[in-house]
Image (cartoon, rainbow over all chains, first blue to last red; front, side, top):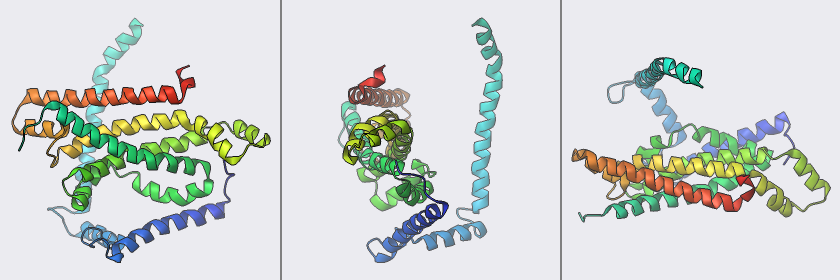
Amino acid sequence: MNTALSRREFWVLSIAGTLGFFGLWTLIALSGLVQQQFLPTPRAVLEKFVDLTRNPFVGYTLQQHLLSSFGRFGAGLRACRARRRAAWPHDGLVSLAR
Amino acid sequence: MRKRGLHEHVLHSSKLVLFGFAAAVGVGVPLGLVMGWSRKAEALLNPAFLLLRPIPPLAWIPLAIVWLGLGDAAKVLIIWLAAFVPSVINSHAGVRSIDPTLLEAARTLGIRRSMLVREVLLPGAAPMVFTGLRLSLQACWTTLVAGELIGAIAGLGHVLYQSSLDIFPAMILVGMIGVAVTGGVMTKMLEWVELRAIPWRRQ
């Protein structure tokens, strides 16, 4: 296994990797191999991202969509915790029996 | 539309899972091994991997349909994405979990690089690699069912979807049991391969 990289080496390679990823994506999107309608550039995606925070899509902005998803996530988590509390006396009896 | 028997749906789904799984393992395991072995490769490839990793495979479904249509190719792509991540992570962890003393001992004995890979790296990483393969296979089935629920003409997911439209609970249960049994059989087959590939794990 290779030895650990210096901090500088690590950051240079990491930044090169990130730029390479987005560069390749942009290159493919702009090359005309795929229509931009099907593969937008990273910039277009970023613009759409910012746009969605201001203008709603299917009735809601990004923040509202996120809140809705977090609400469902929270409901699932609460249900799980409630189930755990309900199961607790049973769990306690089982461990006592052991 | 021609009527299909359960075995045809099972075969169709199994074929998709096998294609996606084989393609993901074929790319993911070598990539994970390289990233585990070389710190430079890890630093270079990890950012892209970290960007893609948190995206759930099911979130790719709309894009896969836009790119590849409603056919099998879109489903194979989604299965590939689902199986790719666990195989990379576990192969990477497998290499990193090798006892450094073993590597040092091998180097001290003047072992050639190719032999080091064959005799130390691969057997050392194999248990974790196989753990990754099992997780990948599980992810393949989960994703396949979701993929086949949308626009499939055959497969167990299609059986589930069609029977839900027909309000036919018995057939829904047949589909569910079909998924469980086929997934279980494939996992057993993988276990069989694992025991032959790394017999010391039996102990």
